[in-house]
Image (cartoon, rainbow, N blue to C red; front, side, top):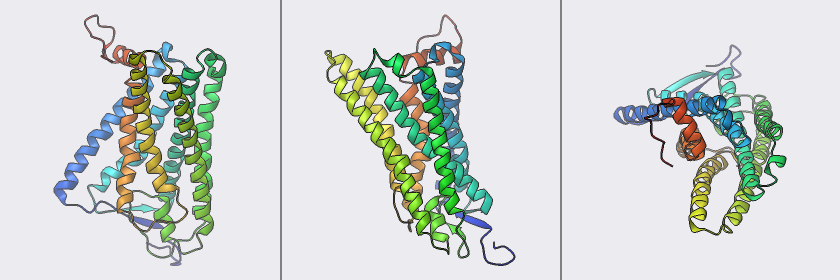
Length: 317
């Protein structure tokens, strides 16, 4: 649809997954179950950390922020994904598309920075255990969490400022299940070089810099782990780091593939699949990787869900 002057697009058509109806229903059911489980996991973790005084420490403070972010993130993206399996196309207004894009970018950038903050926190706890209380007081943790949210939303605002200034007067069909940067850049009929450059530079800052911090932190952690005298201690520490790094690799590699490129992308079928990784799979895995492997969180979750029933058994490590 165009406005009355016929110059600018006022709504976009999102092209969903063109698969057979039986497969669409199967995928819809699968992702609906994942969506509900992710909601339950993260809601339980947020409420447990909030209600358990013993978990009011920087490490769990960051975990609570991550779970809260995942709750918001999947509520922005997954309902649109579920709708993509029920219809062949979906119409969204220009304002609705820009709003969706703003929150999606903001939450994605916030998660990039927050994962780096969490890696730095683990580095201090493992490599500087004696100085950790003075290096990471709760006031510092609060400032780092606030900086993660602030930088993510500021970065999104800057990207949207340049994208929203572009004119859309040609095709209004977006080959994606939600409004994303590259599909919008491909539809513009104005000069997009400045918007592409800003998008690329901000993607480098908000993805590559946090990724460098994550890699540096875990490299130092691994070097410290190698000096642990017992094989059992090394194995337990390595298993925890490996699971954390698995999530980091999936999230950062998929976001780098999608956003850290200076040119708009002209084929999107692979992008749809990759988008599912960081919009559905990573939020589903994060609670299990970061929280459910931690004994303190598991004990607190057991008390929250099951109460203090004397017959209840501890959740195994």
